[in-house]
Image 1: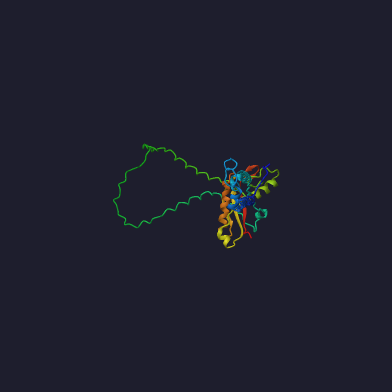
Image 2: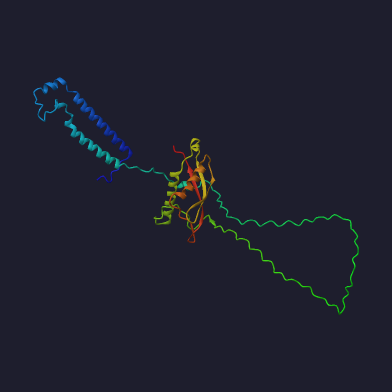
Amino acid sequence: MFKELEVSSTGVGLFFLALVLLTIGLVFFFRRKYNSYKLQDLINANAGKDHESLSNRTKFPEMDVFKISGSFFNYGMTAAVALALVTMSWTTYEQKIKVDLNDLVLEDEVEVEVPRTAEPPPPPPPPPPPVIQEVPDTEVIEEDQPAFENQEVTEETKVEAPVVEKKAPPPPPPPPPPAPVEEEIFKVVEQMPRFPGCEDKKTEKEKEDCAKTKMLEYIYKNLKYPAIARENGVEGQVVLQFVVDKDGSIADAKVVRDIGAGCGTEAEKVVNGMNNMGQKWIPGKQRGRPVRVLYTLPVKFKLEG
């Protein structure tokens, strides 16, 4: 019976107000009723009654408030049950966020700059050329001429060949370490990454529109308008870029167009918070395999009223 009963906060407030007014009204009614009796009239009306019987145990039955205790008990029980029903039926509604998919349209073209991958280190510089030192001229000291021996070779002279020691060749230098391989970041792929929560839709168009709507709802629910921007009436569009990784996580978020007053920082904070929302993005795919994709997201700041 009460399964579909829903009461808003306004209805709860009106019920409490009506209950309080009704209780105050009953109190004043009975107070005025009992104050209307005069003492001499009560004495004259009860002069000849036997007060020893159980029914006449009170001196003035007209002033006996216990006669209406049952009615007040029933009133209190009814009010308590009604209060419990109203409290259990108190329904709170989430604030509806107005989402306009046109907010995802860039006001001006933004040059998309793909994050640079790690480049191999430059080759080492060539060694410096040898420095030729000039030898100063020195005085030549004449030395005694050495005595020459007769080294004439004849047919009978035996010449012994010098003994040459064979040395092992030096080991080759180690190969240079391989350069780190960075995965390519795509700008456009066959299946662009999507915000989670819409995989139950049938067509790709429905999934895409649903994902954009849910993404805007998440952004505007968690986005806090900076106080300095609100005070100075700063409005406009902040553009961010981030990489949706192969596992759906958000990386390398940055602001590429800012309107100042802390709006860019707040938008970047909301984007980075997507990694903590419990569900990751649906990664982009190229030729059936997940890849890293650069995503451009405009966030609109607009004051109400």
